[in-house]
Image 1 (cartoon, one colour):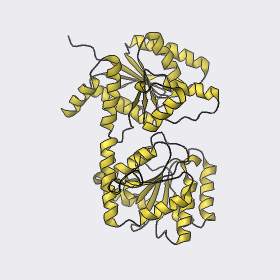
Image 2 (cartoon, helix red, strand yellow):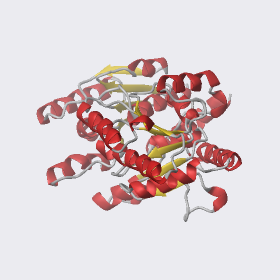
Image 3 (cartoon, helix red, strand yellow):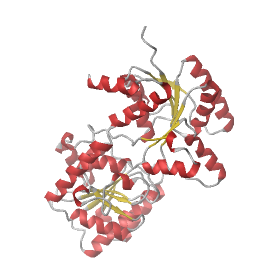
Length: 402
């Protein structure tokens, strides 16, 4: 009789949108390819159908609650679920449900894995304690070297318990040769941008720390210097209720005389085509990015990136002086420095077609080597194997190669 394949339980508050949610779906798919059973405890959301489409089983669970009494009740419910469904390992992807998952895993003597998805601001001892659950896994998955160093510095976590696994990018979706010209033309038409106008793209939700104000100031600086040319800045991101901030950005652009060169276009569903339309992508974050998905996606599309020298972005963007000229995929600037950003924007807009094409090839190749979803899936399954003594990573690779 063949040995029973393990049952893995992932727990996440909701399945609406975001990197943690997408990783949940991707690991569900990897588990099914390896012949394992994949459970996801969540309150559901827009991406819930992707879990079931991948072969996973959804467990309706109040995972978003931060109420201490509810966390204890959730731990009891999870312990019962672990026993009833013969769960072999619990993987938590968010802080509130991680506390319940930790208690349940310890009570049932199951291995406990966490993925540290964000930098998590720590303001006071209570918040520090709350965040610390993400460093209490038997193995703690960090989505970048920056995140791994942060975990070690904050909690003294043994490096042997930390596995650095970069977030995966769908390299088939984000592939330049898969973007039909009509998709790019449709976006340019919607944005009121002529075919000949270079696009400066910022793909980020509208919130102050993402640095939209810095980009607008940099565009204004370029115009003042007479270096902007016909370029247009596209701010592609949902305000998520921050209408005051969106209004402030529009007023800033008007006050600086660049309202005609700044477009707030809201959420862009076809973001791969947006990267294809862009001459350069800007990630102007003023707070550390734990990974920087926009940078990785842009690089996969062969789009050069200007990022801030902060958090994990220096790991993603190969820039001088750390990279040799033949390795460069973009530029890095100090956070909040609109003049430095303007200087790099000018460099990007001034690239010759041949130099721009060469950088695009390097960017795509670098993304292929470091950010493949398949690599993230294989490395995560290897973490499960390490704790369970199974061979999921090998079985998943064999299944994909069949």
